[in-house]
Length: 272
Image (cartoon, rainbow, N blue to C red; front, side, top):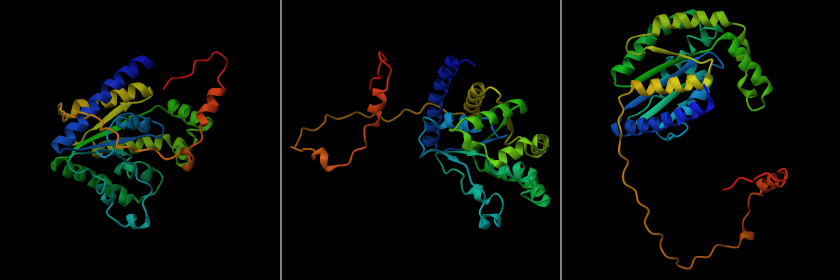
């Protein structure tokens, strides 16, 4: 997908996401979106584009760390249930309770009994959510083995992305088929009518983001909510206030000015 076409359509969809947000706020609806898939499948980048122009007080991202010792003794779904939205909120799970059907199962972080119990309870849990009125959307980002490897290698050489490649990612790289089988088994048990899985082909990151956002918008019956009319009043006349001398305060050094000095001769300096 070309950059120009992508940027134009992304902006249009992000405007629609703002409308969706305002509809959720005004109606008191509760929207939950799960982002699942293999490592380097593009979940994080898509979440970033979804939330880029949204109000973080309404739309929040949940990316839970490894459970604590106390949380390990709780009902498995308990710490995820605590993150569910109240009325007028949107919650996006960057990985969710499906950790148990994926990484925990493949890596042996849960017992076979815990795994089987999850596959039994998960559809029940999700039916409870939807019966209570929560709008639940589940997306699986699918990436090919060749593209995943390319992205892993790119992370190795990019200092801004190196942190994204963990020891767990490397381990998952060597267990491609085990993760495939786990995903297939997960779909058998949890692809239910009340909360179906939607697969996003993500070898093309731009197309994947556009496709996922467009689909999400198409599944929620949101409408236009007119914002309250806001007008700026005239600024009051001065009452004689004078700003304290600048040398009484500590200012951040003008590092940006040193960059302008390094510009090649004849280069145009950005305005504003």
